Image (cartoon, rainbow, N blue to C red; front, side):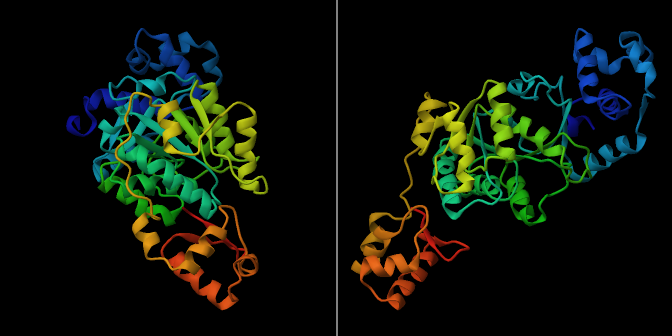
Length: 371
């Protein structure tokens, strides 16, 4: 157990038991931890001592969920995971600064990545092709420079940020709104497994086996922002979890960055509101380096997908069509009208460009430029 958890089995049991107390709120547990001279004082205290510190606890039935404790140890044995307690030297210092830090973190992966420079990426679960392309454009140079990308393994911008980091063999941390062994949504399982295979980290404050619950995700978001030196919002509607994350980040003293989008797009309305409220506008990785990591030098940039070598292979008609495609959305009818080419010719060019990931076809049949 010592090898797995980095601390004595007896002490770990005290922490897990404390975490699994029923009849005591998370806020109360945090207050208990603040009473003693060290967090261990509160954890190792007997229930009678807690009642003396907090007389109103007598109104509640304080007991331990033995099933929950057993579930934790089964997870440790099955996965070789780690439990990082609030008193553990591996617990990220930056995360302790917030008002309501987690008591325990259930972790899998290379924990040394928790100590590196980190930046959070959040955004819409219904990300547009353009939003995903922007995420890739921002994440890749950061990951190449050794900055760890933090996100929530949700659909859309979250998983795009993880994949972009993995694509550069960079580091990424996924903070879950479920137990550390529950992948949600299930379609992201391959990314979950690749994060572990490539030295990333999976983090959760929820008991192994815990499924998704509506109240879990706002709490998950405070860990994403709490771990990060800054949070970048790529796409967000006016009422979205990403704006909650941005608000929490601002309350934690983190820099909030937002990527502007089309004035006509509802998934950009939240970013525009953030910018009106004082968020830092970013549209390139250079902006993030200057604002967040001024002491880091970007790695030599890899050539864009549309490098000169690719452009050299494009015909005159292909280049013409590409120049007419907007970064928001452009209809085939518009391209036919403006290019003077036939509809069949334009369609053929678009199919080739889509295959090369130069453009993307949206659900409404329009096309958006990715690079």
